[in-house]
Amino acid sequence: MNPIAVTAQPRYLGGSGIANKIRRAGLLPGVIYGHNTEPRMIACDPRPLTKALNSSYGPNQLLKLTVTGEDKELLVLCRDPQIHPVTRKLQHVDFFSITPTQKVQLRVPIRLKGRSVGEKLGGRLMFVRRFVTVECTAETLPDAITVEMAPFLRGDIVGVEDLPFPEGVRPVYRKAFKIFEIKAPRVEKVEEVEAAPAKKK
Image 1 (cartoon, helix red, strand yellow):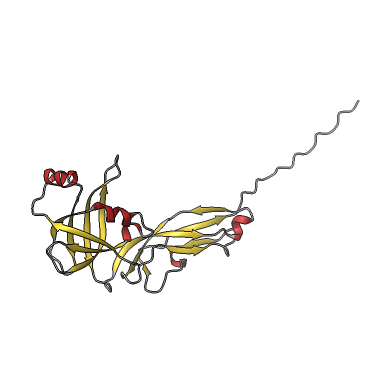
Image 2 (cartoon, rainbow, N blue to C red):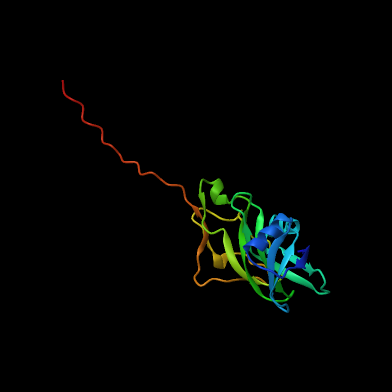
């Protein structure tokens, strides 16, 4: 994954009034915290973040953050992006600083590719869980866990432990759960009705 570059400037005052002034100026208020950096407030251009959130990685898109006046470039993840319910514009964001080899836990989508044999034979796909939490590094972070559907038959049930996790990616869960199932079509019970005896003339 190629990180998206974001430039920010430091800010020294907090509060909702200051945050609103920053937004009116076309910037996005946020904070930085995490590895090898002091927690602090910033303001940045929201356009690269909007691009990041709309990428195939979504909120897991890696960012290279540069703060004006600082020489150090930070590798960060976007955490807790707050979006206005009406305008759908970004309102606030946290930047979590990490190293390329640091293990992090992220929620990753599950992508089903193709159509199974079971579906072609009349089975019905029941997609139960569409996301899974994984532990990985920035170097092994997948945009999704992709499942090739072609081999599955009617009646097959796939759990989180059956997913094809890439090398360096480990699922995190306390209890195994179902991801999807190819349900066999319902067979309606046909009751045989005995013909009534013919009336004698």
